Image (cartoon, rainbow, N blue to C red; front, side):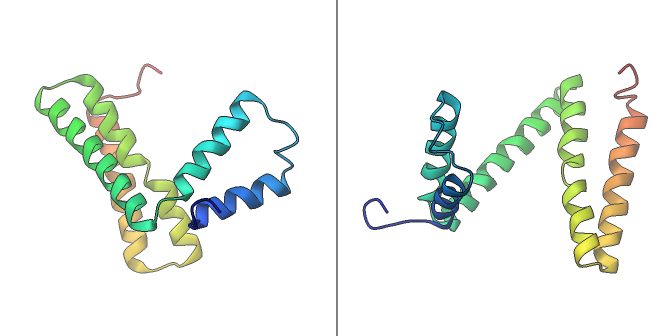
Length: 125
């Protein structure tokens, strides 16, 4: 506890460090990874949510500007950003299935498939 405040992520990082014996091996990557997780753990949930929303807004803004400028990389970014939600939707559908979640998954997979097929993305890979 630093300065009288701890967060949930900080406590999880300390618990993971103790359970995985990460303090025994203080390599360069381990030190900075733990420092980053501890740093994030000091923020409250509203701050982390705000940071995530600003990041998402920057992603969507970049997508929009790239698509307006008719850049090929923006088409790839759109498909990848849309497809990133599919694993979360599958997880939610498996654990708490509803008709709405099933419909959202079908629509999202359809949009990703349509965009990739219509723009002939990932054909040469």
